[in-house]
Figure (cartoon, one colour):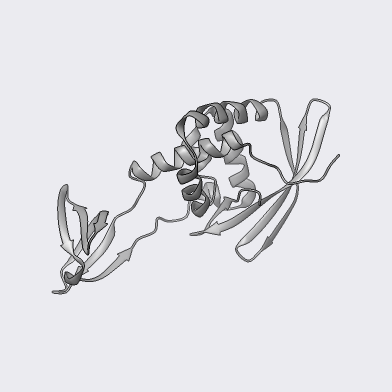
Length: 187
């Protein structure tokens, strides 16, 4: 049995980036509260910012707001989800999503800062092959959590991976974001 970090293939990283980019652009963002100088409040989704002008969408209408007319913008975070309440639950969600072919659900298990980084680095052609390869690697593999350590907003799981006669133990790192535990890519 060897001890090393569980690694993702380049193709898997490509897939992760592609799916995240699609998910972010598909509207997973939440509405912001924009307070204007006259104290009018507007619930809107920021679509674009260029040359001092925010383009926002509110009640189905697109509005352009110069930054000089905005007093403040408050971002509203969604409530933490139960399926990410522990590193163990996040890891299990990742494993099930991968086996089910649920790419977006699998990507949601990673830390947001890494999702964005992967989205900008990876391309489409590598992504489809990478997901299939990763899915095939996980099929027929048993995972057993051997140990869990939490320190503040970080955690690690020691995971035994068994496939056929082969087995190894590795560590998976996690970070807490908005009350949810998300996986980190190996460094």
